Amino acid sequence: MTKYLFTTLATDDLGLQTRSLPIARELVARGHRVMFHCPAKAPRQLIAEAGFENLVSEFHEVSHGDQNPRCLDRRVVNELAPVQSKSDCPDVWNMDHAAATMGLLNEDRVRARCQSFRELMKLCTPDVVVDFWNPCAVIAARSLQKPVITVIQTDAHPSSQGFIWWKTPPPNLPSPAPVVNRVLADYGLPCISKLADLSVGDLTLAVGMPETDPLPETAQVTYVGSVLWQTENARLPEWVNCLPTHRPLVWVYSGNPRYAPSSEGLDSIVVLQACVEALAEEDVLVILTTGHHPLPKELLPLPANFRHEQYLPGLLLADRSDVLVHHGGYGSCQTGLYAGKPAVILPTYSERESNARRLEALGAAVIVPVEIVRGKKRVRAEELRSAIRRVLADGSFGENARRLGERLRNYGGAFRAAQLIEAFSRARSGEKAC
Image 1 (cartoon, rainbow, N blue to C red):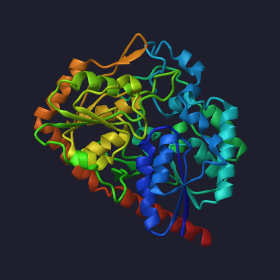
Image 2 (cartoon, rainbow, N blue to C red; image 1 turned 180 degrees about the vertical axis):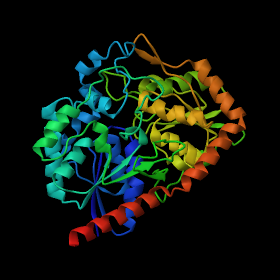
Image 3 (cartoon, rainbow, N blue to C red; image 1 turned 90 degrees about the vertical axis):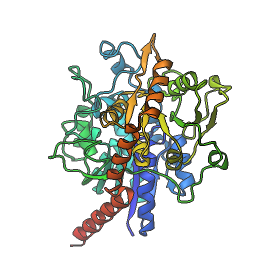
Image 4 (cartoon, rainbow, N blue to C red; image 1 turned 90 degrees about the horizontal axis):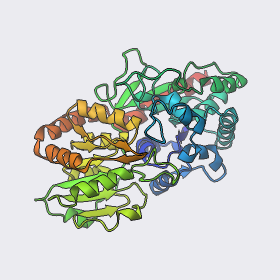
């Protein structure tokens, strides 16, 4: 039996957990032990419902700053005002820039997070750390000579063009690499040239496939296709199964509608607001889900053709739906492809726009832009309504989604990822035994 610690960036949405939980389940089925560390509220609930250990009670402070947008480094935001003057949250160009906005320009914070993860790893003694976008956890593991496996989106790889690959980045974007290098030096670890270097593990698994998540051929990653979570006994409620089939079913997913009251830079409430305005009078049925988050009160009462549930099993609901409307999160994009269903995407920040642009280029989605008007996000209801009508009427979007989904499934998903992780662990254990 191998003991794994799964570490994730502690954002309060479900994207990384829907990626990590299926792999964890496969490893447990093979007789291994998997522990998580994620203190954020919604992921914590999903991890608990799945029956996994989540080691947060003693070490809640490890990633607390990551999960609250109020902790964004305001100096970075102010410095970038000329780049993105229309929003209180700037475009995030790459992994280094993302880490800078989350406080990793602060050396004391980096040291504290790394040290907390070191203490956690000393306490739970994992044989291998499997990381999903938490550079401080990677540093801690390497400082303790723990093998590290990373599971990433390719935009996080150092050989990628980052999250905004369709534009030329501005000069002098902030990077925490100099700060991180001082911490690495104190642990006797080699320096990095960019923070994305910490997204590369002793084994690096990339979700998706080259068509959806391109990298140069020189990048040493193994693609595993779609990795998506659904419990083995998942069922849709009977009211979903009883919905009439002569009206199109639109699944609207926003993820966390509102991360914090002081900033809407990461929020996705605009997705819900736009869909209510655009679809209230349409001859469609709409299911809203918010990923274990409550529906904002200002949206109530919902139109008669709408129904809200905080959480429904995504793969089953996607299969029942005719079109998905969502914020562009990676898991949402992959869910639609896996189910062979087209999407209308309202990307709420740059990483999500990257995902959306790739799906649109592959003919499986249409993007409706999120504008910034007087510091507030806005979507033109008539443009959203037109896009949904177009996707429902044009069968090519669904055909393209089905074709891509078939290719993704051939990569093996969580089953293949677990095979690779187990083989790595056995080889590593054999090396140590010799």
